[in-house]
Length: 286
Image 1 (cartoon, rainbow, N blue to C red):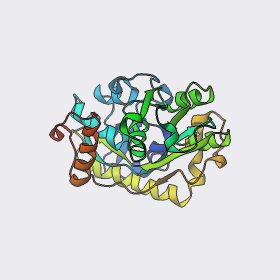
Image 2 (cartoon, rainbow, N blue to C red):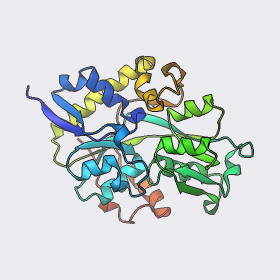
Image 3 (cartoon, rainbow, N blue to C red):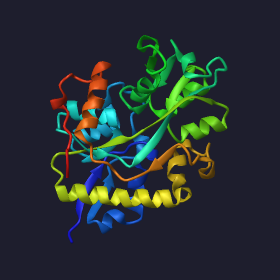
Image 4 (cartoon, helix red, strand yellow):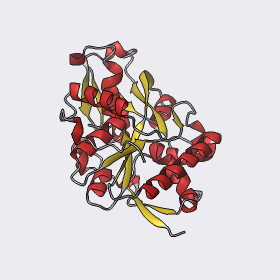
């Protein structure tokens, strides 16, 4: 069987973990594909407010990468605006917690966040999940977000007290709790696998089957793989200190039209989508 090459643009390690496992344990090779990361996650551009100037989108739009993952809402946004014709292939295996952390004793529950700017990375999971999780508690006018940048930058802003509250995922939830922060809000969300339109059905099937098997291996022994995630903290959090509770891995999901329409209408209600769902490209089935 000949081997085809699929180029990947990197995302946060907690989301790319099934890709690392499938690559390093030969699951992609067994499926007849060679997966190549086109950059290291650490090489990303930390503060661009324009999503298409960020590393993973820039690599994809330039044709250097064929696949990347990001939050579900951002997957719709990028496919809607892509000049290359990006498509949402499926919902990714990582089901991650997004926590709003604070070191401020005056902020104890979501209602205390009324009028408090929350540090996010614009048009990523930290942005969308903050709006979604807080709108059931606060009036929309009272929900304030500010673009701070990538997770490391947001966590640093929390520690330096330049942000009273920030939205982060693992490993910064575990690290924050270790270093004295407290959770004000917590929600779980899935993400999307975005692909280039030229990938064949066989390549798509092989890629998704391999990350499904990797997800099974992770859930059977998460401790074996935590070092991939905690490496992002540069020694501040040991692998055994990463919680078991704030991320889990399951099989990918085909993006059903009903769910897409509901998500798209919610985005439009916040002014985060163009208003024409036909512009977003979603692969209905393999």
